[in-house]
Length: 324
Image (cartoon, rainbow, N blue to C red; front, side, top):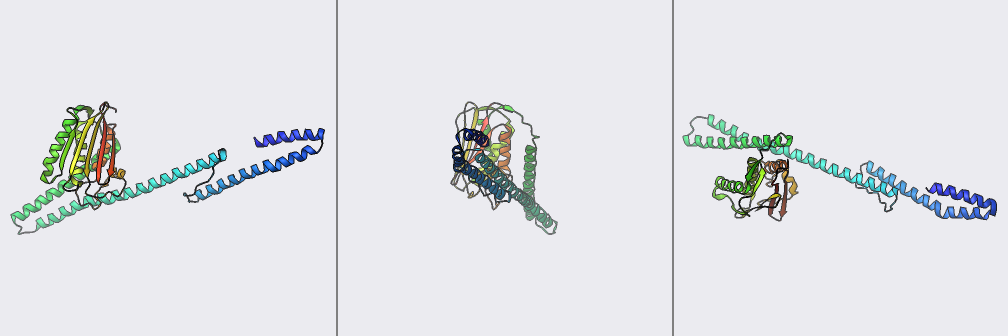
């Protein structure tokens, strides 16, 4: 556009010079030098700055930002390059996080499988020895049974999470009473954990609360969340469970006081084998929340974790009508 206007102005000035003399040519040249040359040089400097900034980014300095505050196409180009850089940086960070979590997964699954397997091998060797008392033999067998069950549950969780990840799980949707399902899960968890379990206080808004869900899978969700809260709660504290409904959703929340400091992003707890107990002194598989997230998403629901100091909250929104 600038070149076109310059050409038109040049033609007009040439005609003026032909009729009115050389004064118009001098005026044209003066205006050209005062306005057009600085404008072109400014555009050229900005273009060179964009080229240099792009070169810095291409050479690996992704922290570099092209500074341009204009509103023309050159500014748009600078903005696009900055956005591309931000997207690349985000992808790089996600890749690094993925690699870190993959390394953690391999390390953790190896640890969780090796620990009970080593115990089983050691106790089998002890049982092979002669002159063991009946009481000692019974004690060893009980330990073997406990370690074998631990491996069985871990392997079952591994199969289940792999099936969910591959999308081969089919839901058996029924019209279930979620309130009754939750009270049964709480009663069973209290029975299995015994008196050492933290006290559970449920706040169920009303009975019944009906929804179209897979009852067995939602039972597993409640079982995993309550089990996690019992394992990872600070001794002497209480677990609070809330259940309510809206027109379209079942609203569930479980709250407990964590026994371990969570010094990483809450979203990472949904990753496989990620546990709040980084020392891995508890016997959780680290798959509980990942399984819960998969089941909730299969139902078309939402799950999120909120952490306020030591207060650990898991919130579920499950659709009352079948969405899948």
